[in-house]
Amino acid sequence: MGKPRFAPSDIPVNLDPAISLNRQTIINYAIHPGDFRLFLTFVSMGNPHAVTFIDQPVEEFPLHNIGPLVERHPIFPKRVNFEVVNIRDDGNLDARVWERGSGETMACGTGACAIGVASRLLGHTGDRVAVHLPGGTLTIDWDGTDEVYLEGPAGRGF
Ligand SMILES: N[C@@H](CCC[C@H](N)C(=O)O)C(=O)O
Image (cartoon, rainbow, N blue to C red):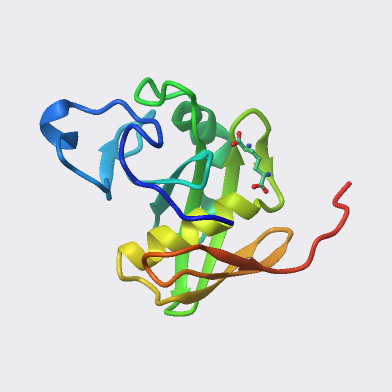
């Protein structure tokens, strides 16, 4: 799936220069959509992703209310894909994806990659992780520097 990129200009995300100057990776950046406080980690897989880790089951997260606010948050000049993740254990993540321009989808390849990359960056999981999405499970391999590999079934969802 290619190499992930992290620089704010690669996402792209417009941040206070005092925060982003010389920063190659932005992790746990706080935003306040609605009444929520979210901590976002930014990953480009060729398209923009913002990943947040939450303590509650992902099914309980109000994605249809918060997703549009994150997608169109003013820090993202090209809008963003938004991933909500709950850590099941050090090899398994539960996730939902709010896709830029589409809304919630059953699965998302680049989204799963961004989730695996963000999780490894934050030390939640290692090189290989299973990302469990409403439409099925995708396995992500990333060694921390090189290409991201995605494995999983493809199917017609409609
Ligand atoms: N909504 C995305 C593009 C779609 C990603 C695709 N569904 C995938 O599986 O990676 C965007 O606007 O970047």
